[in-house]
Image 1 (cartoon, rainbow over the protein chains, first blue to last red):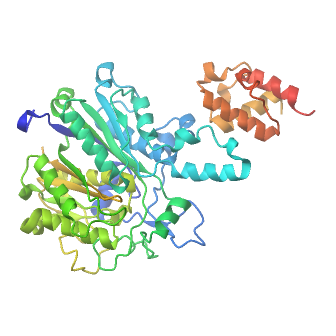
Image 2 (image 1 turned 90 degrees about the vertical axis):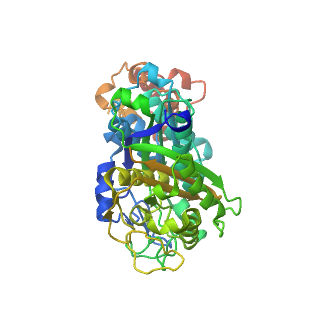
Image 3 (image 1 turned 135 degrees about the vertical axis):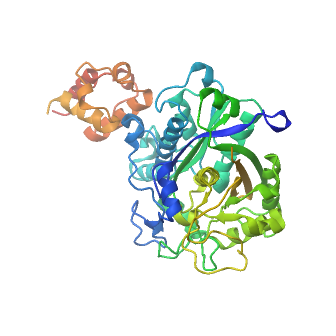
Amino acid sequence: MSRDGKRKVVVTGMGAVTPIGLNVPEIWENAKKGVCGIGEITRYDTTDRQIHIAGEVKGFVPENSIDKKDVRKMDLYTQYAVAAAVEAMKDAGFPGDEKVSEELADRFGVLISSGVGGIGTIENEHAKGETKGFDRVSPFYIPMSITNMASAWVAIRYGLHGLAACSVTACASAAYAIGEGIRYIRDGYADAFICGGSEAAITPLSIGGFTSMKALSTTEDPLRASIPFDAERNGFVMGEGAGMLILEEEEHAKKRGAHIYAEAAGYAANCDAYHITAPDPEAKYAAECLKEAVLDAGMSLDEIDYINAHGTSTSLNDKCETLAVKKAFGDLAGNISLSSTKSMTGHLLGASAAVGSIFAIKAVTDDFIVPTIGYKNADPDCDLDITPNTGKQRQVRASICNSLGFGGHNASLVFRKI
Amino acid sequence: MTTFEKVRELIVSTLNYDADEIKEDTKLMEDLGADSLDLVELNMALEEKYGISIPEEDFPSLTSVDKIAAYLDEHLPA
């Protein structure tokens, strides 16, 4: 129990598959060094396309954590999700491939989000339908492509009978998954949750869609394309991968003797209700969201030392997010270290906040701020300390992972040192 | 290649099972853990590979390696 007699939620496991590494220790070491995971797109021929670079996951072998008979029934986004979930479960002290105990199973849920789910499968099967006829698409087309299936596969693998679902709020999706998981545990509906997000949208159709929106950076240099908060930023770079957290009620975790990384202390979510893709230029609700998440954690604004910013590298996002932080924190904003890890990973869409949360949690446990790389030109509209180019040691009492999704979906998560 | 070998090869390439777990009398669901969607996919692969059309009423009987092999022997042009 904690403040107000409410149950306290802690993080006991983490897992990740990203363009800068295939597990949490690897992505943390690479992020500290400022490694860029963006490069030429290899998944399809980009010859006649405007966009040639993305943050692809490299060296991923799904069979390392998934039975090969099941691999073929999963879209890539589900494969990433399961691989990250297995790492997180092992990290939390659960067996990697066994069902949890019957007693725990009913109190253990899954919330794995995705922005677009099995888009690669949709594209492949549509192409097959066009050539062979639509009655000859794979019988696995539907269960592979639907966006809730990563949650279902993970629930099946571990025999988890609590709530299993998928929040879809575009680029903020994983923040809703983690935040709702916090609430379910805090309010007593569950004792543990696997929460996170997964995305595998480096495909001709989804890159084409974001290209038409003028949302993607057209810069060809992989080191200068995803440049959050830089005056020359001109769009985001697509990334892919997954991030997973094991959330657990504090006493439950202690009884198991689990290692506790940090408290998953606060969550707030709201909506701009302004425009389908553009953020509210006044950033009113994005600012409210940050403040309310800190309040929800029972903390004061001056206790936040680090924000893992949404920082997509689009002109509007970075400007409005800067304004939101200033409006929320006032004069304190200048004391906070920020960084956008999308400068290294690209934008993982529905997995973005899961990976961002891992960096926010590691900042709290290691007292280290990873950098925003590729930064050269100051933008007067983005004048906060974004930890340019080089990471640094700094005491971090608490951190925030911030998210802003198409649709005006804002979500902020607060992690506090134990 | 015998008909059994042809069926085994198709099961391996379509459903990702290991060749050595597939015998002549192997039942796809009971012995290999296949589900109904796996059987649909295997049927579609059979149709495509051998240019045949398997009617709906024949589908429920094609549940083991020997039955599929016998069906192929019966329906493939000599």
